[in-house]
Image (cartoon, rainbow, N blue to C red; front, side, top):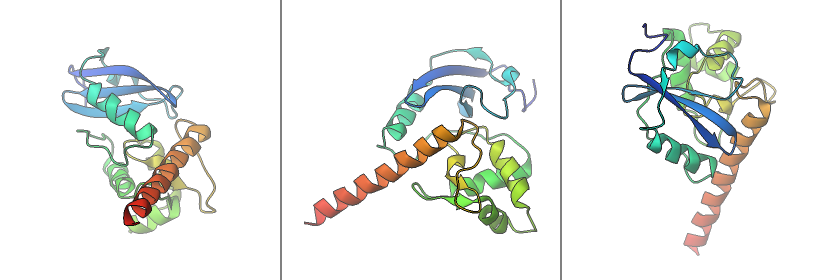
Length: 178
């Protein structure tokens, strides 16, 4: 098996979440994939390995907390596998703060070197760790929701979860200052 298709240590589970099922992949101790049903582009099923529901408890807990609006960042060992350009884009996605958004054009400018927003968009679309690498925080140049591997309904829900979390944090801070 290659890096693209996983190794003999690759395993996966399927978690039921507020947004529907999520397939979580790990290779050894590292998370390598997080996919919605009918994820687009479709991941290579050969990389999933055998189904094994053990060892995903911490991932399930943190995802549940995030989707409940109780967690703003993940503390999970992960490895996003892809081409060097893709990994550079994904690194920029990790720097978009919780509750904030960016655009493909802004990401392209931050990459420098004449990066094209469409190429950036393609790299965002190849993100193997949706939610964990927050590609849902990327909007079109006009601020409209654009493509998302899990569908626009889920993208909107993820952004709403984050906005609600920001609002709760501000209210708690304000209450603590009284």
